[in-house]
Amino acid sequence: MLEIIILALHVLAAAGLIGLVLLQHGKGADMGAAFGSGASGSLFGASGSANFLSRTTAVLAAVFFLTSMGLTYVTSHKPQTGSVMEGHKTEQPAAPVQTQPAKPAEPAPAPTDTKNNEIPK
View 1: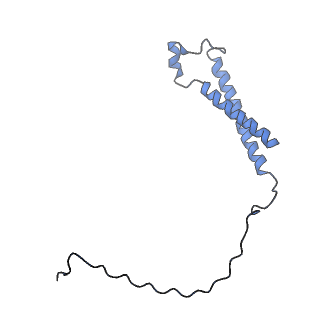
View 2: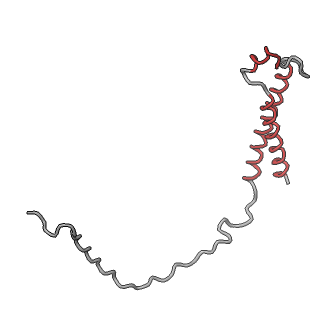
View 3: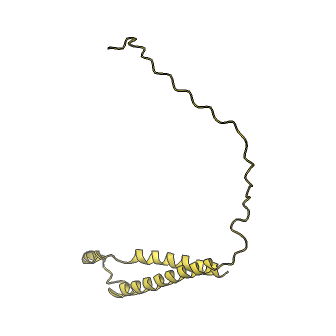
């Protein structure tokens, strides 16, 4: 049950991180602000949105990291219910069969030249 809760938080944090990273402006976004696409009229103000988004991204990144560590801990400390070899049949090796030694291979016939029957000397 704990694993499912941590996994759900992990997926929500990952989706939130993806959304927040896509919402943020890149380093070259300041040049676009000169042509009217700036964030001066936004809900948080010109610098408030960047500050809010970066802090929220940092919090979600920390949650993502902690849920990753939690999932690792929970899944590695599960009790073993059986053997790792359970369900696999192990066959006993068959008794060795007496066989005749193999005959040596006959040498391949020499290639014949059909164009010229005479070999130059």
